[in-house]
Image (cartoon, rainbow, N blue to C red):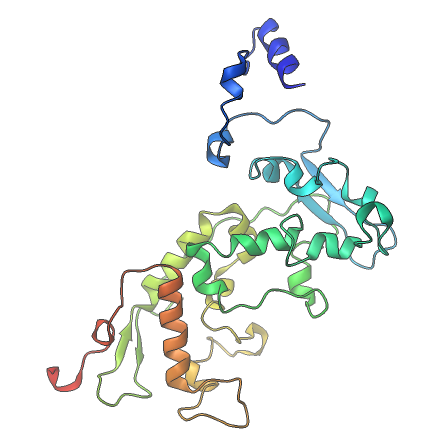
Length: 290
């Protein structure tokens, strides 16, 4: 199939792929980056697929098939070895051809690299993403809400175009002073705007992140992880709004304020492999200059 396509293009005086065995049979896998400019084989696959399961309770999903092709080494990344449509082997109840895996699990399994959610979850483990996603629990289908599900289950056959967003210094505070628990150290002056701007730039470089983050409020939830936009008056609440200075035994899963700050900040820096901070005084200036 590959060689016939190359030969056909050659006869048509079009740009053709290799015609010598050794040019393809190198014994090495090419990376996705090396393959990005090579056209995919034509198998009557759609550019945009509308996934709509009969008798399903959820709305249909518009799926950018062409984009996903260019971000996987092989069609088998999703279609197994059969290259069949998912619905041929998976339905609402599950059937023998699909190992009795129903269509919900086939698309949403957190542990499968062939499912939509499993693949996307794997993307969040990259060092530029894990800083925020480390603290965000994976979306479970049984507890997901309308806002989350509707990002994919829109029921529209066309894909929503989402433009990268710009962080405005008028909307984001430039510096935040943290002084609720100061003792031997002076208050910490956190470069809030600089951090948010950097996270937004990382998001805007990815088409997937741009689509799912949608706006600045999603970036804010990386740190303000329990924040609810519909319940807030103007700005996201401070950490001290939820975390008390001393440990609350009535809420054992909620760390005290100092642990919340250090757990969030240090874990983010370590996961993103940032060079600083490594010592206390990289963030805190000791009182008295000692």
